[in-house]
Length: 187
Image (cartoon, rainbow, N blue to C red):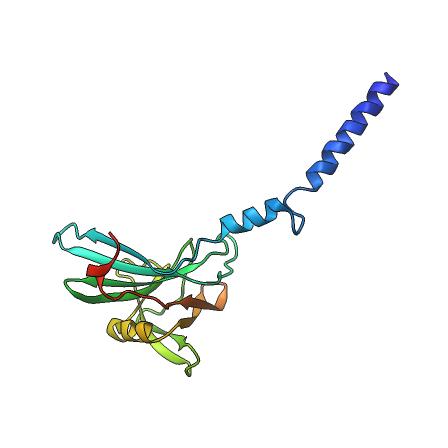
Protein backbone atom coordinates (compact mmCIF):
# COMPACT_ATOMS: atom_id res chain seq x y z
CA UNK A 1 0.00 0.00 0.00
CA UNK A 2 2.85 2.38 0.87
CA UNK A 3 4.52 1.65 -2.50
CA UNK A 4 1.25 2.34 -4.31
CA UNK A 5 0.94 5.78 -2.71
CA UNK A 6 4.51 6.72 -3.68
CA UNK A 7 3.85 5.68 -7.29
CA UNK A 8 0.64 7.69 -7.25
CA UNK A 9 2.44 10.78 -5.87
CA UNK A 10 5.25 10.36 -8.41
CA UNK A 11 2.72 10.11 -11.24
CA UNK A 12 0.85 13.16 -9.90
CA UNK A 13 4.10 15.14 -9.64
CA UNK A 14 5.03 14.17 -13.22
CA UNK A 15 1.62 15.30 -14.50
CA UNK A 16 1.80 18.61 -12.63
CA UNK A 17 5.32 19.21 -13.91
CA UNK A 18 4.32 18.59 -17.53
CA UNK A 19 1.27 20.86 -17.12
CA UNK A 20 3.49 23.65 -15.84
CA UNK A 21 5.53 23.56 -19.05
CA UNK A 22 2.67 24.27 -21.38
CA UNK A 23 2.28 27.23 -23.72
CA UNK A 24 2.96 29.81 -21.01
CA UNK A 25 6.73 29.49 -21.38
CA UNK A 26 8.35 31.93 -23.81
CA UNK A 27 9.76 30.30 -26.90
CA UNK A 28 7.60 27.18 -26.78
CA UNK A 29 5.91 26.06 -29.99
CA UNK A 30 2.48 26.39 -28.37
CA UNK A 31 3.09 30.07 -27.53
CA UNK A 32 4.06 30.90 -31.12
CA UNK A 33 1.00 29.19 -32.57
CA UNK A 34 -1.31 30.83 -30.00
CA UNK A 35 0.11 34.28 -30.80
CA UNK A 36 -0.20 33.65 -34.53
CA UNK A 37 -3.83 32.63 -34.08
CA UNK A 38 -4.59 35.74 -32.00
CA UNK A 39 -3.44 38.23 -34.67
CA UNK A 40 -5.36 38.34 -37.95
CA UNK A 41 -3.32 37.81 -41.09
CA UNK A 42 -2.28 41.26 -42.30
CA UNK A 43 -1.78 40.76 -46.04
CA UNK A 44 -2.96 44.19 -47.15
CA UNK A 45 -6.22 45.32 -48.65
CA UNK A 46 -9.24 43.02 -48.80
CA UNK A 47 -11.95 43.79 -51.35
CA UNK A 48 -15.64 42.85 -51.33
CA UNK A 49 -18.58 43.54 -53.62
CA UNK A 50 -22.12 42.94 -52.38
CA UNK A 51 -25.45 44.10 -53.81
CA UNK A 52 -27.42 46.76 -51.97
CA UNK A 53 -30.63 45.03 -50.84
CA UNK A 54 -32.82 47.99 -51.76
CA UNK A 55 -31.30 49.38 -54.99
CA UNK A 56 -29.62 46.23 -56.27
CA UNK A 57 -26.53 48.30 -57.12
CA UNK A 58 -23.13 47.03 -55.98
CA UNK A 59 -21.56 48.13 -52.70
CA UNK A 60 -17.79 47.93 -53.07
CA UNK A 61 -15.65 47.99 -49.92
CA UNK A 62 -11.87 47.90 -49.49
CA UNK A 63 -10.49 47.35 -45.96
CA UNK A 64 -7.09 46.99 -44.37
CA UNK A 65 -6.38 45.82 -40.80
CA UNK A 66 -4.20 47.76 -38.37
CA UNK A 67 -0.58 46.75 -37.88
CA UNK A 68 -1.03 46.89 -34.11
CA UNK A 69 -3.64 46.13 -31.49
CA UNK A 70 -5.58 48.41 -29.20
CA UNK A 71 -5.61 47.36 -25.55
CA UNK A 72 -9.17 47.39 -24.29
CA UNK A 73 -9.88 46.36 -20.72
CA UNK A 74 -12.61 44.03 -19.44
CA UNK A 75 -15.27 43.34 -20.63
CA UNK A 76 -13.44 43.85 -23.94
CA UNK A 77 -10.16 42.38 -25.17
CA UNK A 78 -7.11 43.59 -27.10
CA UNK A 79 -8.04 43.69 -30.78
CA UNK A 80 -7.05 45.11 -34.13
CA UNK A 81 -8.94 47.76 -36.07
CA UNK A 82 -9.72 48.23 -39.73
CA UNK A 83 -9.75 51.21 -42.07
CA UNK A 84 -12.28 50.95 -44.89
CA UNK A 85 -13.37 52.82 -48.00
CA UNK A 86 -16.71 52.23 -49.72
CA UNK A 87 -17.79 52.98 -53.26
CA UNK A 88 -21.44 53.17 -54.30
CA UNK A 89 -22.95 54.39 -57.55
CA UNK A 90 -19.58 54.86 -59.23
CA UNK A 91 -17.93 57.11 -56.63
CA UNK A 92 -16.39 57.05 -53.17
CA UNK A 93 -19.18 57.02 -50.61
CA UNK A 94 -17.64 56.54 -47.15
CA UNK A 95 -14.40 56.14 -45.23
CA UNK A 96 -14.29 54.77 -41.68
CA UNK A 97 -12.34 53.05 -38.96
CA UNK A 98 -13.85 50.20 -36.96
CA UNK A 99 -12.92 47.96 -34.04
CA UNK A 100 -12.52 44.34 -35.18
CA UNK A 101 -13.73 42.99 -31.85
CA UNK A 102 -15.96 44.73 -29.35
CA UNK A 103 -15.30 48.11 -27.80
CA UNK A 104 -16.40 51.74 -27.79
CA UNK A 105 -14.78 54.73 -29.45
CA UNK A 106 -15.66 58.12 -28.01
CA UNK A 107 -17.34 60.85 -30.04
CA UNK A 108 -19.62 63.65 -28.93
CA UNK A 109 -23.22 64.09 -30.04
CA UNK A 110 -22.30 66.89 -32.45
CA UNK A 111 -19.34 65.02 -33.92
CA UNK A 112 -15.68 64.94 -33.02
CA UNK A 113 -12.21 64.94 -34.50
CA UNK A 114 -9.39 62.41 -34.35
CA UNK A 115 -5.72 63.33 -34.67
CA UNK A 116 -4.28 61.68 -37.79
CA UNK A 117 -0.90 61.54 -39.45
CA UNK A 118 0.00 60.42 -42.97
CA UNK A 119 3.57 59.05 -43.24
CA UNK A 120 5.94 61.69 -41.82
CA UNK A 121 3.68 64.69 -42.42
CA UNK A 122 2.52 66.95 -39.60
CA UNK A 123 -0.45 65.59 -37.60
CA UNK A 124 -3.89 66.92 -38.57
CA UNK A 125 -7.21 66.84 -36.82
CA UNK A 126 -9.89 65.25 -39.02
CA UNK A 127 -13.64 65.50 -38.47
CA UNK A 128 -15.40 62.27 -37.59
CA UNK A 129 -19.01 61.27 -37.31
CA UNK A 130 -20.87 58.48 -35.54
CA UNK A 131 -22.72 55.72 -37.33
CA UNK A 132 -26.42 56.36 -37.97
CA UNK A 133 -27.27 53.44 -35.67
CA UNK A 134 -25.02 54.89 -32.92
CA UNK A 135 -22.65 51.90 -33.04
CA UNK A 136 -19.60 53.09 -31.04
CA UNK A 137 -17.35 50.47 -32.68
CA UNK A 138 -17.28 52.45 -35.96
CA UNK A 139 -16.49 56.10 -36.74
CA UNK A 140 -16.78 57.76 -40.15
CA UNK A 141 -14.38 60.33 -41.63
CA UNK A 142 -16.49 63.25 -42.86
CA UNK A 143 -14.36 63.93 -45.98
CA UNK A 144 -14.22 60.60 -47.79
CA UNK A 145 -12.82 62.02 -51.06
CA UNK A 146 -9.89 63.56 -49.20
CA UNK A 147 -9.34 60.24 -47.41
CA UNK A 148 -9.22 58.36 -50.72
CA UNK A 149 -6.76 60.86 -52.23
CA UNK A 150 -4.54 60.75 -49.14
CA UNK A 151 -4.69 56.94 -49.01
CA UNK A 152 -3.53 56.70 -52.62
CA UNK A 153 -0.65 59.12 -52.00
CA UNK A 154 0.76 57.65 -48.76
CA UNK A 155 2.11 54.50 -47.16
CA UNK A 156 0.95 54.79 -43.53
CA UNK A 157 -2.08 56.27 -41.79
CA UNK A 158 -1.78 56.76 -38.03
CA UNK A 159 -4.85 57.66 -35.97
CA UNK A 160 -5.11 58.61 -32.29
CA UNK A 161 -8.37 56.98 -31.23
CA UNK A 162 -10.19 57.81 -27.95
CA UNK A 163 -11.74 54.74 -26.30
CA UNK A 164 -14.30 54.55 -23.53
CA UNK A 165 -12.46 53.98 -20.21
CA UNK A 166 -9.27 53.08 -22.12
CA UNK A 167 -7.93 56.50 -23.12
CA UNK A 168 -6.41 57.54 -26.42
CA UNK A 169 -4.44 54.91 -28.32
CA UNK A 170 -2.46 55.11 -31.55
CA UNK A 171 -3.38 52.82 -34.42
CA UNK A 172 -1.29 52.35 -37.59
CA UNK A 173 -2.61 51.20 -40.97
CA UNK A 174 -0.33 50.21 -43.87
CA UNK A 175 -2.39 51.65 -46.73
CA UNK A 176 0.10 51.01 -49.53
CA UNK A 177 -1.27 49.14 -52.52
CA UNK A 178 -4.92 50.20 -52.54
CA UNK A 179 -6.57 49.49 -55.88
CA UNK A 180 -9.00 52.45 -56.16
CA UNK A 181 -10.84 50.97 -59.16
CA UNK A 182 -13.55 48.56 -57.94
CA UNK A 183 -14.01 47.27 -61.51
CA UNK A 184 -10.46 45.88 -61.38
CA UNK A 185 -10.85 44.13 -58.01
CA UNK A 186 -10.43 40.36 -57.84
CA UNK A 187 -13.72 38.51 -58.21
